[in-house]
Image (cartoon, rainbow, N blue to C red; front, side, top):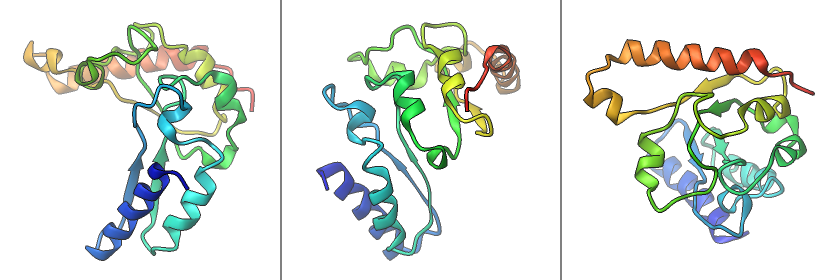
Length: 168
């Protein structure tokens, strides 16, 4: 196991020790030479098995195939059973920038940026639930109410979803 896998297993072990009932493993570690932020699809089954041995249910293991150097072909190559859900947002560039906090808290609505969302959704299994996550501190600071931001996000996501034609 690499350091990231060991860290994920340790995280789940600690969660067990302190009485957590569930844990979500977030794998975003900027490593430009490693797709999926250091976690490859081949690592996930072993990580799942080692984490399951702790006794704490792992809700999901998050990977970021398109913003971590992967392609939609990489998404197609992932086993169907690894898809608990898919998350969409958009951005101005697929290349990670030095402005990590802006990338996290100022995501664009689906369809407003350059992410290949339709191709991504075509590659995801058809039965996969899709979540839209578009935090916007600027929207909040400009007084756009949360319900209105949610309506805009839902409308934009529906428009992208309407164009998707999953292949599996």
